[in-house]
Image (cartoon, helix red, strand yellow):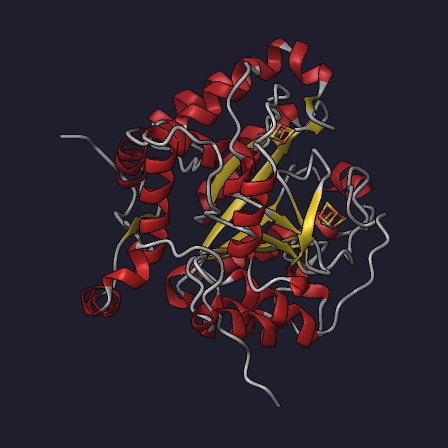
Length: 387
Ligand code: SF4
Ligand code: SF4
């Protein structure tokens, strides 16, 4: 019998049936129809470029984009919703918005699940109510070295505060029914402290995911040449096997070990700017395909893009988690079973589906979910209530 001193506490999260059907449809498109034009699994909406930190490596806060008002944000989100049950809200810092609670509440009301919120966490105590409406919170914590890391974040005392907030909210995950993941960017400066961040996550009960620093589309050159970096990733692979709370997949960890070329299906995770502009196929290739306020829905826009533009052959192989993990899942669907097993064993959250309500819906009207209607179905749009 395997000895395990930790309290067993598998957590199960429900994934909507709609999401599972999207996944199966994409596997069918990729493996049978042999097309890499895949429909979104997790659209990512940058609802602001404003942030309360000034990270030296940040690409967002220096961009000049007009902020959009609440009604516009909700209109954009409502146009993401048809055929898209999952949503990633990011920024800038989303919690700097005064209307963030109202927005997240509306996101839930529109039926999004899972809902992911990326935050630096500093405003979480003030805006704690958002936790009622999210499934996953992703907080960046790259180093525990307060003095050094405050300099990178550009705000004195920020590192200590983030550690305090992460430790506090990690203890409230079961009560508030959300999952807290710490994303740790590995830079040449943070390399040595990464295992301490993992220890911290384990101690407080958060999951951990590493991400190598990417400069443009390429891995940081110092990391790429570093033996210490390779040792670290090898250690993380062993530690994941050894039941540590590392949520990144084995495939991802193996991919970032040597930065080998890999496939990329970027339309699985389309990026949307605050004003509703949608990148196609990815943020790195910098093409905006259209604006959500000009079309009925994101699904409609993607269908239009698929008809108009063939997927570009891209050999850049960006080692970015947000593109690599979904691509790996689609490319190696059997790997999902292995990761499911590892998560169960490592006491990490596991997705299950569907809810009884969804099943009832499905049996009442399977066509609604199964058949992809061409173009736009006005009945499928969920709009915020007026007034
Ligand atoms: S927390 Fe994120 S958005 Fe804010 S400055 Fe740092 S990297 Fe940029
Ligand atoms: S590898 Fe990079 S540039 Fe190429 S499609 Fe993927 S994200 Fe875009």
